Image 1 (cartoon, one colour):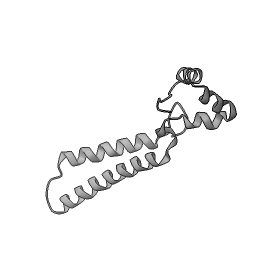
Image 2: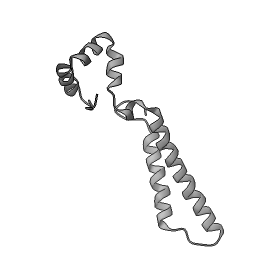
Image 3: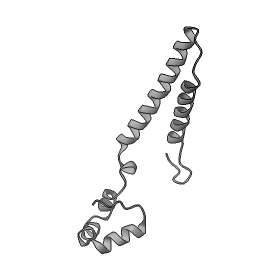
Length: 103
């Protein structure tokens, strides 16, 4: 299905417009509706890639800052901003959601 379904209203409209979808939902409701979910909600690899990229950004910023400090050079503000932003983003991803109770 090319159209993304994000709300119950969109699901109801799609079920009325597509008899094949209605039949799949009737036969296997949980499986059919799970197949309509957004990839960000169902694909764990997207989440893992984002967490890995943020972790690499943190390690790169910390490692770069340490190397620059060891050589007696000043640490650029951009490096600090990248590291701080990555830490904040990673904390936001790993913190539990207040609406769902889990992250």
